[in-house]
Amino acid sequence: MATPSRDVSTALPDDFAARLGRMECERRDLEIIIFGLPMAASEDTISLIISVAVSLGMTLAPSEITTSFRIPAGDASRGRPLVARFTTIARRNELLARARRQQVDLVASRINPSWPGSRISLQERSTAAEKRVFNEARRLARAHGVRFVWMRRGVTYIRVSEGSPSFRFTSADELLCKVGVVASGSGALGFFLSGLVPVSRSD
Image (cartoon, rainbow, N blue to C red; front, side, top):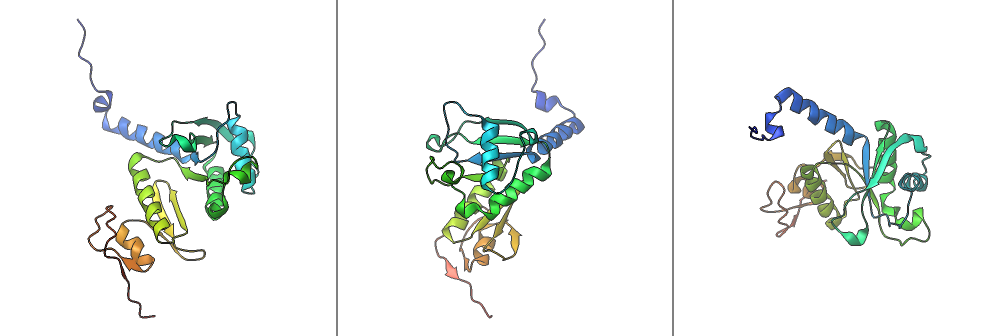
C-alpha cells in the first residue's frame, strides 16, 4: 500500500532547514549575476567573465571560477543573464567593487568593440524579496540622480555621489530625504511620488 506523499519542506526538522538555508546563503555569497551581455551561438562563458574582469582592470584566472552559466531572462531583448560562481568570496567582492566604482562607464562595447554601447551591470545573487528592494531603490535612484546603488549580502545600500557617505536603504522616504525631497504618503516600499517637496536646510 502506497504511503501518502508529504511536502519535504514541511517535514524537515527546524535545525536541518536552518542548515540548508545557511548553505544556500554561502553559495550565493560566491556568485555574481551579469546583466546585459550579448549572447553568441557558441560562447565560452568563463572566458567572457574573464573579459569583463579585464575591462574593469582586474586579472582573473579561469581556476578562480568554479562554474558559469546563462539563466532564463525576464526581458529577452537584453539577452540571458550570466551567472558565475567564484572559488572565494574575496575575489567575487573585488570584481563587484570594481564594477560599482565604474558602473557609469560599464557598457558592452567596452568588453568587445563589436558589441553595442548598451549598459551592463554586475550584481550579487539574491532572493526574490531582496531583488525587489534593490530594484525599487535603483528605480528611485535613477529618478533623483543618485549615482550608486549596490547590494551586499542581500542588503541594499545607497551613495548619493562620489565621496558622500553610504547608507542602508530602508524606505523611499529616507532615500528621498537624502537627496533633498520627501514623498507624502509613501509606504514602506510603495513609491507614491506625488507631492514631492524640497527639504528645508539650515546650513
